[in-house]
Amino acid sequence: MWEKDNNIHEVKEIRTRTSVFFGVGAIKKIDDIARDLKSKGIDKVIVMSGRNAYKATGAWDYVEKALQANGIGYVNFDQVTPNPTTHHVNDATKLAREFGAKAVIAIGGGSPTDAGKSVAILLEYPDKTANDIYEFTFTPEKAAPIVSINLTHGTGTETNRFAVVTVPEKNFKPAIAYDCIYPMYAIDDPQLMTKLSPKQTRYVSIDAVNHVVEAATSTVLSPYSVTLAREVIADVAKYLPKAIENPEDLEARYYLAYAAMMGGVCFDNGLLHYTHALEHPLSAVKPELAHGLGLAMLLPAVIKTIYKDRPHILADILSPIVPGLKGEASESEKAAKGVQEWLASVGVCEKLLDEGFAESDVEKLVDLVYTTPSLSGLLDIAPSGNGRDVVEAIYRDSLRPM
Image (cartoon, rainbow, N blue to C red):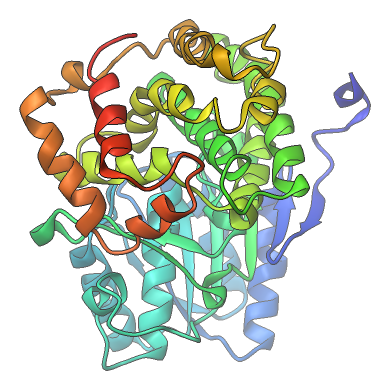
Protein backbone atom coordinates (compact mmCIF):
# COMPACT_ATOMS: atom_id res chain seq x y z
CA MET A 1 0.00 0.00 0.00
CA TRP A 2 2.86 2.36 0.75
CA GLU A 3 3.73 2.42 -2.94
CA LYS A 4 0.82 4.78 -3.62
CA ASP A 5 2.56 7.50 -1.58
CA ASN A 6 5.80 7.13 -3.51
CA ASN A 7 6.30 9.33 -6.56
CA ILE A 8 7.95 7.13 -9.20
CA HIS A 9 8.80 10.25 -11.25
CA GLU A 10 10.97 11.66 -8.45
CA VAL A 11 14.53 10.45 -8.94
CA LYS A 12 16.04 9.10 -5.72
CA GLU A 13 19.67 8.59 -4.86
CA ILE A 14 20.20 5.23 -3.21
CA ARG A 15 23.57 4.57 -1.62
CA THR A 16 24.92 1.07 -1.49
CA ARG A 17 28.60 0.66 -2.32
CA THR A 18 27.39 2.24 -5.56
CA SER A 19 25.52 5.52 -5.91
CA VAL A 20 22.37 4.58 -7.80
CA PHE A 21 20.17 7.14 -9.52
CA PHE A 22 16.78 5.48 -9.47
CA GLY A 23 13.43 6.42 -10.97
CA VAL A 24 11.67 7.54 -14.12
CA GLY A 25 13.95 10.07 -15.79
CA ALA A 26 17.10 8.95 -13.98
CA ILE A 27 18.93 8.72 -17.31
CA LYS A 28 19.21 12.51 -17.23
CA LYS A 29 21.62 12.13 -14.33
CA ILE A 30 24.24 11.04 -16.84
CA ASP A 31 24.99 14.77 -17.22
CA ASP A 32 26.06 14.96 -13.58
CA ILE A 33 27.99 11.72 -13.86
CA ALA A 34 29.88 12.88 -16.96
CA ARG A 35 30.70 16.17 -15.27
CA ASP A 36 32.08 14.30 -12.26
CA LEU A 37 34.14 11.96 -14.44
CA LYS A 38 35.66 14.94 -16.25
CA SER A 39 36.46 16.64 -12.94
CA LYS A 40 38.44 13.52 -12.00
CA GLY A 41 40.54 13.81 -15.15
CA ILE A 42 38.68 11.16 -17.12
CA ASP A 43 38.55 12.45 -20.69
CA LYS A 44 38.20 9.16 -22.59
CA VAL A 45 35.89 6.20 -21.96
CA ILE A 46 34.87 2.96 -23.58
CA VAL A 47 31.13 2.34 -23.87
CA MET A 48 30.14 -1.33 -23.58
CA SER A 49 26.82 -2.38 -25.10
CA GLY A 50 24.95 -4.87 -27.20
CA ARG A 51 24.13 -4.11 -30.81
CA ASN A 52 20.70 -2.53 -30.50
CA ALA A 53 19.17 -1.92 -27.07
CA TYR A 54 21.42 0.96 -26.08
CA LYS A 55 20.05 2.95 -29.00
CA ALA A 56 16.53 1.52 -29.24
CA THR A 57 15.77 2.45 -25.62
CA GLY A 58 16.92 6.03 -26.12
CA ALA A 59 19.69 5.70 -23.53
CA TRP A 60 22.46 6.45 -26.03
CA ASP A 61 20.96 9.81 -26.98
CA TYR A 62 21.45 11.04 -23.42
CA VAL A 63 24.85 9.42 -22.94
CA GLU A 64 26.37 10.68 -26.18
CA LYS A 65 25.12 14.21 -25.55
CA ALA A 66 26.52 14.22 -22.01
CA LEU A 67 29.91 12.93 -23.12
CA GLN A 68 30.17 15.48 -25.91
CA ALA A 69 29.03 18.34 -23.65
CA ASN A 70 31.79 17.52 -21.18
CA GLY A 71 34.55 16.96 -23.71
CA ILE A 72 34.85 13.24 -23.03
CA GLY A 73 35.95 11.15 -25.98
CA TYR A 74 34.52 7.68 -26.44
CA VAL A 75 34.72 4.45 -28.37
CA ASN A 76 31.82 2.01 -28.42
CA PHE A 77 32.23 -1.74 -28.24
CA ASP A 78 28.75 -2.86 -29.29
CA GLN A 79 29.36 -6.58 -29.72
CA VAL A 80 28.45 -7.81 -26.22
CA THR A 81 25.99 -10.72 -26.36
CA PRO A 82 24.01 -12.48 -23.64
CA ASN A 83 26.40 -14.77 -21.77
CA PRO A 84 29.47 -12.70 -22.81
CA THR A 85 32.75 -14.48 -23.39
CA THR A 86 36.42 -13.86 -22.73
CA HIS A 87 36.73 -13.09 -26.46
CA HIS A 88 34.35 -10.12 -26.07
CA VAL A 89 36.32 -8.86 -23.09
CA ASN A 90 39.71 -9.22 -24.77
CA ASP A 91 38.53 -7.53 -27.97
CA ALA A 92 36.97 -4.66 -26.03
CA THR A 93 40.08 -4.27 -23.88
CA LYS A 94 42.27 -4.01 -26.97
CA LEU A 95 40.00 -1.26 -28.32
CA ALA A 96 39.98 0.55 -24.97
CA ARG A 97 43.74 0.39 -24.50
CA GLU A 98 44.46 1.65 -28.02
CA PHE A 99 42.03 4.54 -27.51
CA GLY A 100 43.39 5.41 -24.08
CA ALA A 101 40.13 4.90 -22.20
CA LYS A 102 40.27 5.73 -18.50
CA ALA A 103 36.79 4.52 -17.47
CA VAL A 104 34.00 2.21 -18.61
CA ILE A 105 30.36 3.06 -19.25
CA ALA A 106 28.15 -0.02 -19.67
CA ILE A 107 24.69 0.29 -21.21
CA GLY A 108 22.44 -2.76 -21.17
CA GLY A 109 21.57 -5.68 -18.96
CA GLY A 110 23.96 -7.71 -16.90
CA SER A 111 26.08 -8.80 -19.85
CA PRO A 112 27.48 -5.37 -20.87
CA THR A 113 28.06 -4.46 -17.22
CA ASP A 114 29.81 -7.75 -16.40
CA ALA A 115 31.94 -7.51 -19.54
CA GLY A 116 32.58 -3.85 -18.71
CA LYS A 117 33.71 -4.67 -15.19
CA SER A 118 36.17 -7.12 -16.68
CA VAL A 119 37.52 -4.51 -19.11
CA ALA A 120 37.85 -2.08 -16.19
CA ILE A 121 40.13 -4.54 -14.42
CA LEU A 122 42.26 -5.09 -17.51
CA LEU A 123 42.74 -1.35 -18.05
CA GLU A 124 44.65 -1.39 -14.76
CA TYR A 125 46.59 -4.56 -15.59
CA PRO A 126 48.05 -4.17 -19.11
CA ASP A 127 49.84 -7.51 -18.96
CA LYS A 128 46.70 -9.52 -18.19
CA THR A 129 43.83 -10.96 -20.26
CA ALA A 130 40.26 -11.98 -19.59
CA ASN A 131 41.42 -15.57 -19.34
CA ASP A 132 43.70 -14.58 -16.46
CA ILE A 133 40.70 -13.10 -14.65
CA TYR A 134 38.30 -15.99 -15.23
CA GLU A 135 40.80 -18.78 -14.77
CA PHE A 136 41.90 -17.10 -11.52
CA THR A 137 45.60 -16.74 -12.23
CA PHE A 138 45.67 -13.48 -10.28
CA THR A 139 43.58 -11.46 -7.83
CA PRO A 140 42.86 -7.91 -9.02
CA GLU A 141 42.90 -5.13 -6.46
CA LYS A 142 42.07 -2.21 -8.73
CA ALA A 143 39.93 -1.34 -11.73
CA ALA A 144 39.08 1.72 -13.80
CA PRO A 145 35.89 3.56 -12.77
CA ILE A 146 32.66 1.91 -13.93
CA VAL A 147 29.27 3.45 -14.70
CA SER A 148 26.38 1.02 -15.22
CA ILE A 149 23.26 2.17 -17.10
CA ASN A 150 20.83 -0.64 -16.55
CA LEU A 151 18.28 -1.61 -19.20
CA THR A 152 16.79 -4.67 -17.47
CA HIS A 153 15.28 -5.49 -14.08
CA GLY A 154 17.08 -8.66 -13.12
CA THR A 155 20.80 -9.03 -12.55
CA GLY A 156 21.53 -6.51 -9.82
CA THR A 157 25.10 -6.27 -11.11
CA GLU A 158 24.84 -2.49 -11.12
CA THR A 159 24.98 -2.55 -7.31
CA ASN A 160 27.42 -5.32 -6.49
CA ARG A 161 30.95 -6.70 -6.88
CA PHE A 162 30.14 -9.67 -9.09
CA ALA A 163 30.72 -10.40 -12.76
CA VAL A 164 30.26 -13.50 -14.89
CA VAL A 165 31.99 -14.23 -18.21
CA THR A 166 32.22 -17.52 -20.14
CA VAL A 167 35.46 -19.20 -21.20
CA PRO A 168 34.02 -20.89 -24.31
CA GLU A 169 36.93 -23.22 -25.06
CA LYS A 170 36.39 -24.96 -21.73
CA ASN A 171 32.62 -24.53 -21.28
CA PHE A 172 33.48 -22.64 -18.10
CA LYS A 173 31.19 -19.87 -16.87
CA PRO A 174 32.83 -18.69 -13.63
CA ALA A 175 31.84 -15.81 -11.38
CA ILE A 176 34.23 -13.28 -9.86
CA ALA A 177 33.64 -11.04 -6.85
CA TYR A 178 36.06 -8.20 -6.15
CA ASP A 179 35.59 -4.95 -4.28
CA CYS A 180 37.35 -3.04 -7.05
CA ILE A 181 34.48 -3.65 -9.51
CA TYR A 182 31.64 -2.03 -7.64
CA PRO A 183 30.34 0.54 -10.13
CA MET A 184 31.00 4.12 -9.10
CA TYR A 185 27.57 5.14 -10.40
CA ALA A 186 24.52 3.30 -11.68
CA ILE A 187 21.32 4.42 -13.36
CA ASP A 188 18.07 2.48 -13.01
CA ASP A 189 15.46 4.23 -15.14
CA PRO A 190 12.22 2.24 -15.64
CA GLN A 191 11.38 4.08 -18.85
CA LEU A 192 14.43 2.41 -20.44
CA MET A 193 13.00 -1.03 -19.61
CA THR A 194 9.58 -0.86 -21.25
CA LYS A 195 10.85 -2.30 -24.56
CA LEU A 196 11.99 -5.56 -23.01
CA SER A 197 10.42 -8.48 -24.83
CA PRO A 198 7.81 -10.54 -22.98
CA LYS A 199 10.33 -13.36 -22.51
CA GLN A 200 13.06 -11.01 -21.29
CA THR A 201 10.62 -9.40 -18.88
CA ARG A 202 9.88 -12.77 -17.33
CA TYR A 203 13.42 -14.11 -17.31
CA VAL A 204 15.15 -11.13 -15.76
CA SER A 205 12.66 -10.92 -12.88
CA ILE A 206 13.00 -14.66 -12.29
CA ASP A 207 16.75 -14.03 -12.03
CA ALA A 208 16.07 -11.55 -9.23
CA VAL A 209 13.91 -14.11 -7.40
CA ASN A 210 16.66 -16.71 -7.63
CA HIS A 211 19.24 -14.28 -6.29
CA VAL A 212 17.32 -13.75 -3.09
CA VAL A 213 16.18 -17.34 -2.56
CA GLU A 214 19.83 -18.35 -2.56
CA ALA A 215 21.12 -15.39 -0.55
CA ALA A 216 18.48 -15.92 2.16
CA THR A 217 19.24 -19.63 2.55
CA SER A 218 23.02 -19.92 2.22
CA THR A 219 25.21 -20.78 5.19
CA VAL A 220 26.32 -17.13 5.33
CA LEU A 221 22.81 -15.65 5.36
CA SER A 222 22.02 -12.69 7.58
CA PRO A 223 18.80 -11.03 8.77
CA TYR A 224 19.51 -8.37 6.15
CA SER A 225 19.53 -10.85 3.27
CA VAL A 226 16.33 -12.49 4.52
CA THR A 227 14.53 -9.16 4.88
CA LEU A 228 15.54 -8.08 1.40
CA ALA A 229 14.53 -11.47 -0.01
CA ARG A 230 10.97 -11.21 1.23
CA GLU A 231 10.55 -7.73 -0.21
CA VAL A 232 12.01 -8.73 -3.57
CA ILE A 233 9.73 -11.74 -3.99
CA ALA A 234 6.70 -9.74 -2.89
CA ASP A 235 7.43 -7.04 -5.47
CA VAL A 236 8.01 -9.53 -8.28
CA ALA A 237 4.85 -11.42 -7.40
CA LYS A 238 2.81 -8.22 -7.48
CA TYR A 239 4.33 -6.38 -10.43
CA LEU A 240 5.55 -9.02 -12.89
CA PRO A 241 2.01 -9.93 -14.00
CA LYS A 242 1.29 -6.24 -14.50
CA ALA A 243 4.39 -5.74 -16.66
CA ILE A 244 3.46 -8.80 -18.70
CA GLU A 245 -0.06 -7.48 -19.22
CA ASN A 246 1.08 -3.94 -20.04
CA PRO A 247 4.77 -3.60 -20.95
CA GLU A 248 4.49 0.20 -20.80
CA ASP A 249 3.36 0.20 -17.16
CA LEU A 250 6.02 2.41 -15.58
CA GLU A 251 4.94 1.67 -12.04
CA ALA A 252 5.35 -2.06 -12.63
CA ARG A 253 8.76 -1.55 -14.24
CA TYR A 254 9.80 0.75 -11.38
CA TYR A 255 9.13 -1.82 -8.68
CA LEU A 256 10.59 -4.67 -10.70
CA ALA A 257 13.75 -2.59 -11.13
CA TYR A 258 13.71 -1.87 -7.40
CA ALA A 259 13.34 -5.59 -6.69
CA ALA A 260 16.28 -6.38 -8.96
CA MET A 261 18.44 -3.70 -7.36
CA MET A 262 17.62 -5.02 -3.88
CA GLY A 263 18.35 -8.51 -5.16
CA GLY A 264 21.81 -7.40 -6.20
CA VAL A 265 22.49 -6.02 -2.73
CA CYS A 266 20.95 -9.13 -1.16
CA PHE A 267 23.30 -11.59 -2.82
CA ASP A 268 26.22 -9.23 -2.36
CA ASN A 269 25.66 -10.08 1.30
CA GLY A 270 24.23 -13.61 1.43
CA LEU A 271 25.94 -14.87 -1.75
CA LEU A 272 24.56 -17.60 -4.04
CA HIS A 273 24.55 -21.39 -4.13
CA TYR A 274 22.82 -24.21 -6.03
CA THR A 275 20.69 -22.52 -8.66
CA HIS A 276 23.45 -20.33 -10.03
CA ALA A 277 26.15 -22.96 -9.60
CA LEU A 278 24.08 -25.39 -11.66
CA GLU A 279 22.80 -22.87 -14.21
CA HIS A 280 26.21 -21.62 -15.28
CA PRO A 281 27.12 -24.95 -16.92
CA LEU A 282 23.76 -24.95 -18.76
CA SER A 283 24.35 -21.61 -20.49
CA ALA A 284 28.06 -22.30 -20.92
CA VAL A 285 27.21 -25.41 -22.94
CA LYS A 286 24.29 -23.68 -24.70
CA PRO A 287 25.15 -19.95 -24.91
CA GLU A 288 21.82 -19.23 -26.56
CA LEU A 289 20.01 -20.26 -23.36
CA ALA A 290 18.70 -17.25 -21.43
CA HIS A 291 20.19 -17.21 -17.94
CA GLY A 292 16.84 -16.51 -16.31
CA LEU A 293 15.21 -19.44 -18.10
CA GLY A 294 17.99 -21.73 -16.97
CA LEU A 295 17.40 -20.62 -13.39
CA ALA A 296 13.64 -21.06 -13.71
CA MET A 297 14.06 -24.65 -14.87
CA LEU A 298 16.21 -25.46 -11.83
CA LEU A 299 14.44 -23.51 -9.09
CA PRO A 300 11.67 -25.98 -8.15
CA ALA A 301 14.17 -28.80 -7.70
CA VAL A 302 16.41 -26.54 -5.64
CA ILE A 303 13.48 -25.61 -3.40
CA LYS A 304 12.67 -29.32 -3.00
CA THR A 305 16.28 -29.95 -1.94
CA ILE A 306 16.79 -27.08 0.50
CA TYR A 307 13.35 -26.71 2.09
CA LYS A 308 14.11 -29.23 4.84
CA ASP A 309 17.21 -27.21 5.80
CA ARG A 310 15.59 -23.74 5.73
CA PRO A 311 11.85 -24.40 6.20
CA HIS A 312 11.05 -21.30 8.25
CA ILE A 313 12.91 -18.86 6.03
CA LEU A 314 11.48 -20.33 2.84
CA ALA A 315 7.94 -20.43 4.17
CA ASP A 316 8.27 -16.74 4.97
CA ILE A 317 9.98 -15.41 1.87
CA LEU A 318 7.99 -17.58 -0.56
CA SER A 319 4.63 -16.64 0.96
CA PRO A 320 3.81 -14.10 -1.81
CA ILE A 321 4.03 -16.84 -4.45
CA VAL A 322 3.32 -20.00 -2.41
CA PRO A 323 0.87 -19.04 0.33
CA GLY A 324 0.04 -21.39 3.17
CA LEU A 325 3.45 -22.87 3.91
CA LYS A 326 3.92 -23.53 7.63
CA GLY A 327 7.67 -23.93 7.81
CA GLU A 328 7.59 -27.70 8.31
CA ALA A 329 10.33 -29.80 6.75
CA SER A 330 7.75 -32.21 5.33
CA GLU A 331 6.45 -29.48 3.00
CA SER A 332 9.35 -29.67 0.55
CA GLU A 333 7.27 -31.20 -2.26
CA LYS A 334 4.44 -28.72 -1.70
CA ALA A 335 6.85 -25.78 -1.76
CA ALA A 336 8.59 -27.01 -4.91
CA LYS A 337 5.34 -27.60 -6.76
CA GLY A 338 4.03 -24.25 -5.59
CA VAL A 339 7.05 -22.49 -7.10
CA GLN A 340 6.62 -24.50 -10.30
CA GLU A 341 2.97 -23.42 -10.48
CA TRP A 342 3.94 -19.78 -9.93
CA LEU A 343 6.48 -19.97 -12.75
CA ALA A 344 3.77 -21.44 -14.99
CA SER A 345 1.42 -18.63 -13.98
CA VAL A 346 3.85 -16.07 -15.42
CA GLY A 347 4.32 -18.09 -18.57
CA VAL A 348 7.50 -20.09 -17.88
CA CYS A 349 6.79 -23.83 -18.09
CA GLU A 350 9.95 -25.13 -19.78
CA LYS A 351 12.16 -27.81 -18.27
CA LEU A 352 15.59 -29.08 -19.30
CA LEU A 353 14.23 -31.66 -21.75
CA ASP A 354 12.35 -28.88 -23.54
CA GLU A 355 15.60 -26.95 -24.06
CA GLY A 356 17.54 -29.81 -25.60
CA PHE A 357 19.17 -31.34 -22.53
CA ALA A 358 18.88 -35.08 -21.95
CA GLU A 359 19.49 -37.66 -19.24
CA SER A 360 22.81 -38.39 -20.92
CA ASP A 361 23.97 -34.79 -20.34
CA VAL A 362 23.65 -34.91 -16.57
CA GLU A 363 27.07 -36.40 -15.85
CA LYS A 364 28.82 -33.79 -18.01
CA LEU A 365 26.88 -30.97 -16.35
CA VAL A 366 27.73 -32.27 -12.89
CA ASP A 367 31.40 -32.48 -13.86
CA LEU A 368 31.31 -28.84 -15.02
CA VAL A 369 29.86 -27.73 -11.68
CA TYR A 370 32.93 -29.18 -9.96
CA THR A 371 35.57 -28.18 -12.52
CA THR A 372 34.46 -24.64 -13.41
CA PRO A 373 36.50 -22.17 -11.34
CA SER A 374 34.50 -20.52 -8.51
CA LEU A 375 31.41 -22.76 -8.62
CA SER A 376 32.66 -25.13 -5.92
CA GLY A 377 32.75 -22.11 -3.63
CA LEU A 378 29.02 -21.66 -4.15
CA LEU A 379 28.39 -25.30 -3.33
CA ASP A 380 30.44 -24.96 -0.15
CA ILE A 381 27.91 -22.47 1.26
CA ALA A 382 24.82 -24.33 0.04
CA PRO A 383 22.43 -25.32 2.82
CA SER A 384 22.17 -29.02 1.87
CA GLY A 385 25.87 -29.72 1.38
CA ASN A 386 28.26 -29.86 -1.57
CA GLY A 387 27.86 -33.53 -2.44
CA ARG A 388 27.81 -34.73 -6.03
CA ASP A 389 24.63 -36.71 -5.30
CA VAL A 390 22.80 -33.52 -4.37
CA VAL A 391 23.84 -31.75 -7.56
CA GLU A 392 22.95 -34.73 -9.73
CA ALA A 393 19.52 -35.05 -8.11
CA ILE A 394 18.72 -31.39 -8.80
CA TYR A 395 19.61 -31.76 -12.47
CA ARG A 396 17.57 -34.97 -12.83
CA ASP A 397 14.56 -33.45 -11.04
CA SER A 398 14.77 -30.48 -13.43
CA LEU A 399 14.57 -32.52 -16.63
CA ARG A 400 10.76 -32.64 -16.53
CA PRO A 401 7.88 -31.16 -14.48
CA MET A 402 7.44 -32.46 -10.96
